[in-house]
Image 1 (cartoon, rainbow, N blue to C red):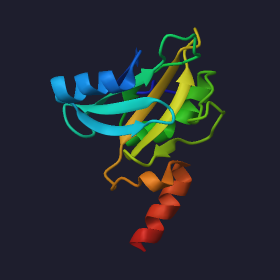
Image 2: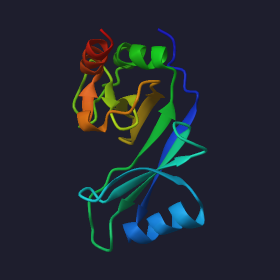
Image 3: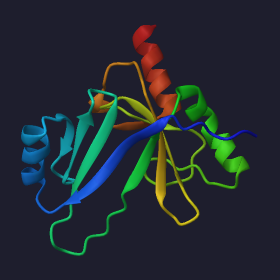
Image 4: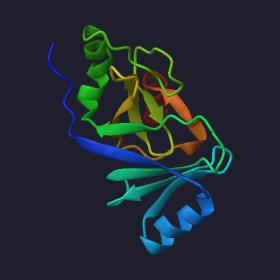
Length: 158
């Protein structure tokens, strides 16, 4: 089976001591567009180069020893992303969902919206394949399976 094509890096993540201070810097000083913020999770996401192009995640860890696993996300064409679970399994790599559980299909992050699939490299680093979707954002859905997103999308169109 062939390799999974990676088009480029989609997102990067930084740990920050003060989320609001970092949001002021990246939003006001650098002029990045805020994509989403979760005060409960203490994370903010910014679009880089415009909506859907690339993303920066800012994760507040403060000064305490918090457990935080950051990851790299690679942009992928949707067709390759949908084939990725089988290709990963053929390479003895376990495809994972957003919660880190083994999965047979990608998930969709509704607020973006983007299809996404996670997996770990040989050192345990978390990697993600991501494909932006042409659909309108649906943040109220949260994160759903690819099949559920399609069911909901077809019912809206049908």
